[in-house]
Amino acid sequence: MTRVPRKPLQDELVFQNVSECGLSLDDVQARILSFMAKDPKAVYHFIVGTDSQVYRGSTKFVTGIIIRRVGRGAWACYRQTIVPRELRSLKEKLSYETMLSQEVASYFMGDALRKMEEIVLPYIYKGAALEHFIDIDAGTHPTLNKTSRYVKEMIDRVEAMGVYAARVKPESYAASSYANRYTKKSV
Image 1 (cartoon, rainbow, N blue to C red):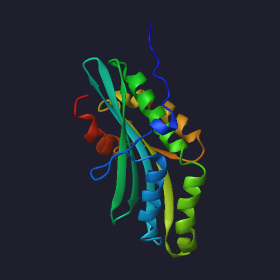
Image 2 (cartoon, one colour):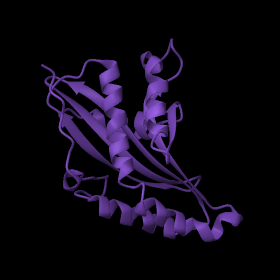
Image 3 (cartoon, rainbow, N blue to C red):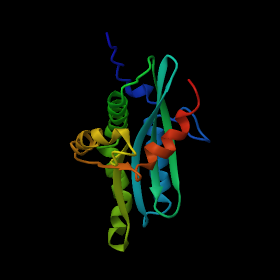
Image 4 (cartoon, one colour):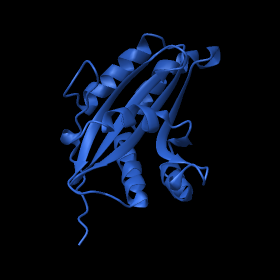
């Protein structure tokens, strides 16, 4: 019998980065808004992406959140989720990664994204912008990426949210680079 991991409660969504631990979603939102307020005339990318690594007896998922000031820095954080079994099915892992990214991204869909947009809105005609992405750790090239046959399904799931654009390799750096870095430390 396959056990489906339970969905974490909002207060269990705890994030960290290289300088801070124990960040709540409200803390993350405050850091993002503060980062953006320092340069409201910039172009920003708000990105969520998840990667995973299978270890003996468990699978570690890391979901990263990045606010990127294009060409001029970024602020990022991540959270870990441990599933107490080895997820060997590529489709199941990719599907769970996408679901975790969607879960985190959904918390920003209403008020949080509106507040981000309000920061850049007065400068929109001077070049300011905010784009939102969910990065999927999959590639489209069938000979290079075993995940290629699941790409359309994952993109459709993300785009069905109606707010985020989906990105895949090589553009999906929030998943394939940032989150990937933190999956390498064993559970």
